[in-house]
Length: 536
Ligand code: C2O
Image (cartoon, rainbow, N blue to C red; front, side):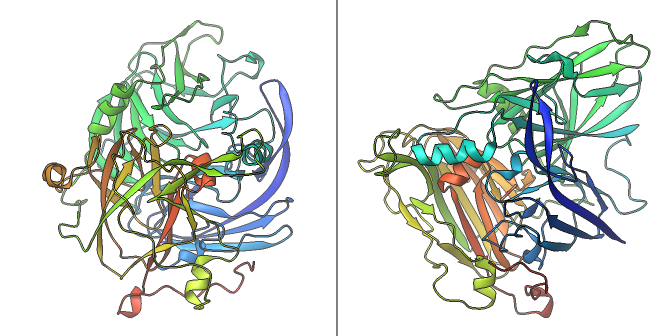
């Protein structure tokens, strides 16, 4: 194993998309940002230097950060932000992981443009558990707003209403050839007949789950969220913000150009967003002006298409890569995730109320100092440890909304002892409207042991849990009007954020944190903070 050094200069760069330019915050001037390469067991040092007017922090989404919570990145959770003119060196070791992940800014809405791929190769000499591809290609899906994204969210918070949806989706930074501004071309995947390519697909969008498909080709899915799965072949992938999917594509046509399409999946009756991002598969020897074979993206309410993909996901669970699902449970938790409305006298457009989101009716309030520091230095008054393990009052979660739609504010964490096991059922609520919530847990992978529609019924539903080969992930969709059950072992000391990875829901308060105490052994404790850790 070796040490990999990176320098991330956070700089503003004028960038043109949809026939117009605007200044955006980037890493090293790039959109999407640079790919971070490492091998399993490597140590990664990333010096982040903040040259912009905003506070900044970077999260290494899905990297487990065993004992190094200080380098996890969510602002005010594990660190104070890096202030303008300041820098911080993120320092972590990749332990027991290989595959595709992503890094992104974890403050304000900066991750709209501050994101990139993390490619973790297996240890030297260790092959993939699938045939070696001819080439590997990173494919980052994201969103583009014509206006400044910080303004988009600030206006929404002032009004109390939902923010505008993006003006385009992008594939590797570009809306693509089939957009209103065709002169910009788009991403081209160049292939040779007969060869196989590994696509490392990342959804870095702020607010949209996306379908991904390629005209005339099938995809063989081999990995999600940097964990191997039993390979399966499918037409269309569904991928939520924060998720990653590795898929093999074989160039089994003789020649031609084929459309790649990324289009929104909105399993919610209220949102409307039709923008499809496009790119092209181009066979060697095909003329540049040849016609492109098109594909029709699934309609945005194509729940069946999404379910077909989700239901096919199973851990590889081989001898080399066993699925170590916790079979006993120390904490049996039920968290409702959903939207609500709180009073807001200054919100004129919202008629004196504002949209909020909550977990177990708690709308998380960001502290002004980082939780991890407060925990480590035993600073009182920053957070409380009374996050409820069950909803405060039972109601028909997916049926008639309760009388009061208001939520409680708080900076509450749920406390776990080192190595305890957790079963957590995430239950969507239909308080305003049922909606898919891709929930991301920092610091851990979890097993997705069950999923269903309607209200979770412990007696009945628990019987059908898959404790043998469930998919292992760091971000999972809670289905609209339904529930998802996960299990994990709290074997990583620290303070670990959990939130909906739709950024608008995070902003509205759909977030909480687990506090995991140190274990008894010397290798089970959080390491001391680095000396350059930013101050608030
Ligand atoms: Cu990818 Cu807390 O986020």
